Image (cartoon, rainbow, N blue to C red; front, side, top):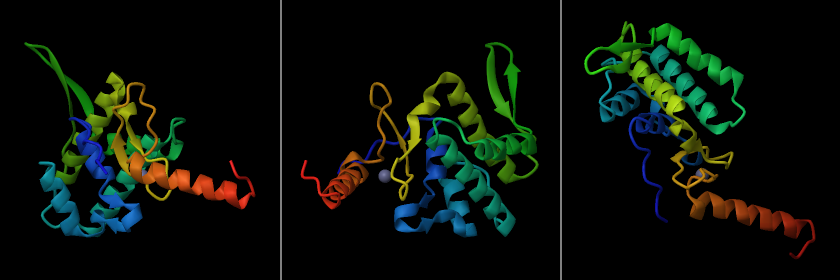
Length: 184
Ligand SMILES: [Zn+2]
């Protein structure tokens, strides 16, 4: 099995956040304060030294809203409202700078966690505007939902690792056909 390469910057931080939870392994790095600190440090993001339970709940909610956003071509209203709520709460907004002209996203940065969330939101907004966000997807297997970066020419991949989830899907479809008494 060859793992898919990680998403390029700035999407990588969105991918690593979504993948702090691994459904197939029943693992959630954001279930403990040390797990949240470790993820933030690995991404070079600020984080409270001792995150409170409310911080963990907020980050898990933010993360799952991102997972839903990546997983639905139609868009999920609830997920979008969580993300828009974080844009408002953190005061995340674009700022133009002069010579040479450049734009970046800034926030009010009331807390270290606000700053971290602003950076993730900046990546989501920037890549949704340039079109690259559509390549960051969640696996179509409902018990997986792992975030992967789709490098296929037309962005048509559906499974995190074709050799794992794609094969599982084929096996299920095969068994379903067998159970239905078909031999094709
Ligand atoms: Zn998968």
